[in-house]
Amino acid sequence: MNDHLKRGNLLWEGSRMFLPEHKQSLLERKRLKQKLQKPILDPDKLEEMNQTLCAAMEFAQDITVSCFQDGEIVCCTGKICRYEEFEKAVWIKGDEDQLYKLKLDQVLDIVL
Image (tube, rainbow, N blue to C red; front, side, top):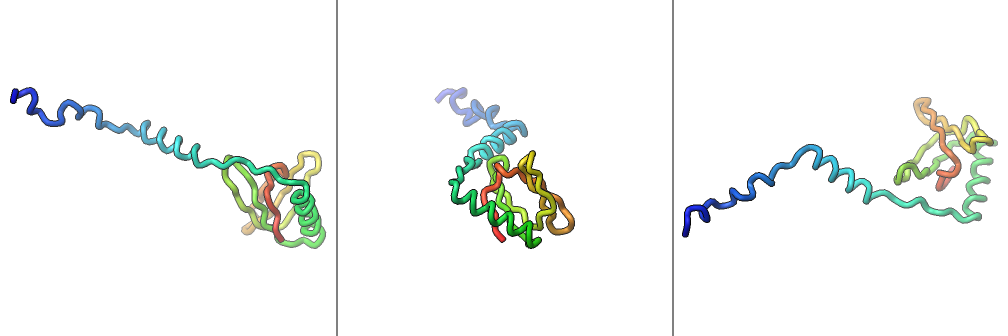
């Protein structure tokens, strides 16, 4: 066997380099694949959420709201402190006085 054929895996050694940019792009691709599609709510569910929202505002009850944001479902818990009809948004005051502004078109579920 010739000496140049006994070099082992040296021919491919240069391609083993993995830059931080490569890792970042692979993680970004994985995150994009895991994103969810926004579900479409039927009118009955919208009416049920509207009634729950009105009851929570009237009696100042704690609610848990599930929202769709950036391909993920996020849950917020607290009391409704403000409802903005023109912007179609709800402000929820959570634990430790955190304020959440939730757009109503992103809301998936409201539970007392």
